[in-house]
Image (cartoon, rainbow, N blue to C red; front, side, top):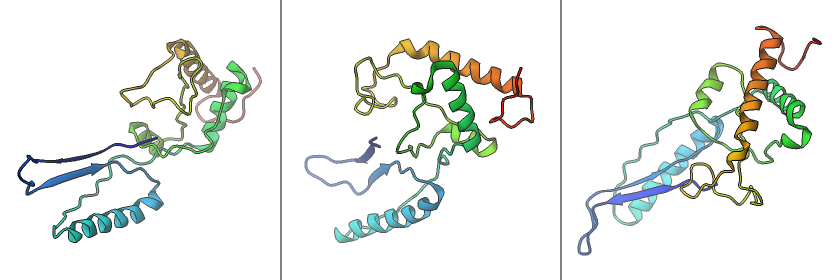
Length: 172
């Protein structure tokens, strides 16, 4: 996955701007974030100094990294397997270090972010543009499966009761 960067300033064909701005999203887990911040700040300042410039660096933490709860992920896996067969649940071999609104929910309550594969038929899921890309294409035929999955998760959770272990389904 590519994360975009932007560079801005008031360039013209005959002058260099007095100020410029570089923005880049950086996603990492909490342990790596501190090391990355130090490295990025040092790198930007060294590049500026090499050109006789001064850099002011801001490193803003916007979202925590999304971390799934192991028990809740097992609950999701069991639900997917029951509803659609074992071939449909596919753990990511290299989990994304995504940071988004749902990460704040997962910081408060155990849960699991589920991604619904919606690559067009015949497309390599590893090669298609991600869902935030202007080039993203979706197979809307999977929306029914997504709705069924969320309904199944809710029904199984309600059947367990409010304090039950989500990995143990009692016989009905």
